[in-house]
Image (cartoon, rainbow, N blue to C red; front, side, top):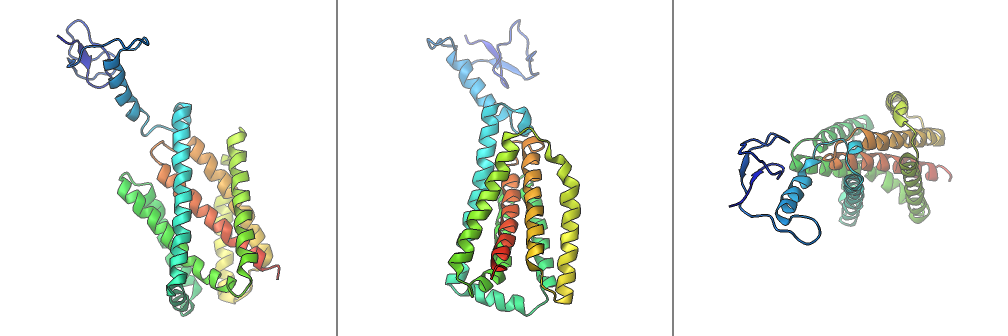
Length: 281
């Protein structure tokens, strides 16, 4: 006859008790007797505990889980960000090779840039909300909205870049963006600095940037290289702050939201680095 074990954690329940003293789970007769595997472990119990271990760290703060679980979370987060970036590039490639990008550019050019930015910001807000939903399908939908929104908003810039020697602008810009992003990420993970103090800078800087963009659009003034430099600094602070938040405030099941957030910041940083490279000519 098998032993009484907790159906939740697999702990042996003795004395005829029906409730596990460890976790409060219901006790039931084990269908499989324990078998010693020669390495000091009982196979039946090991199988049960392995099943529990696969779910016990769900919805826990990343900072509170074992190192292996943290590594798994970071791997999924940056794979999500990288996958979104690849999807973004493929989307733009498809739009330009099919000529749809030029139709979109004509449509965007026919309306106020403020309207375009308004639609983009609303789409980004919706995508951001969905990436942190409980259902994974909603999270993936939010990520797809992010990719589509950032692909469409990039079309006017890339059409302008085509009038330049595109290779002399796009490739150096991408390399510079990747370098800055990697360096900022390394700073957060290799230092013990608390970057939460950047929150107020990021929030107020973002409001100032939006106000400046609205003023420039309404007056028709050129943004210039100094604005691009200021935005690169702001986005660098944003990446530092977001990466620190991911380390300290995110749960282990929020890797899609974390990856989408980093993807968005990376794309905005790339935008202004491209603008800075274009302003050299």
